[in-house]
Image (tube, rainbow, N blue to C red; front, side):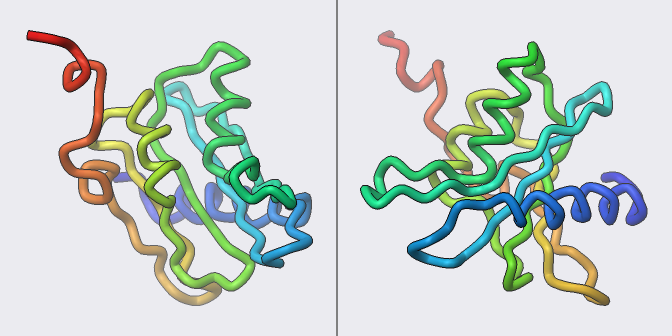
Length: 138
């Protein structure tokens, strides 16, 4: 896993993008910073919609930004909420990450200033994921 200074930098990027979140309903800001294998970082924030099913999550926005720019090999993602409550990607975001990442993707979750972030792997958070292999007929 990356050293703590690198994790702190990635978390800071996730914290910074929260200010652009559109959260008029929940007021729960989330930011994500996704690092590619070659060190580029793409950020995303949540965008709520009155029809909640059309809302976009920070992790999805970061993945979309990276993919639209030609990146699909990811090393780490940091996730932070305005509450600094250790939020992890939701199930839908975990599945989106699994589309592009192996089980060893590092997921860094913000526990707040002065607290060490909690780190997981995507495999820890989403065991037995749905993949292309699980959808193929025998």
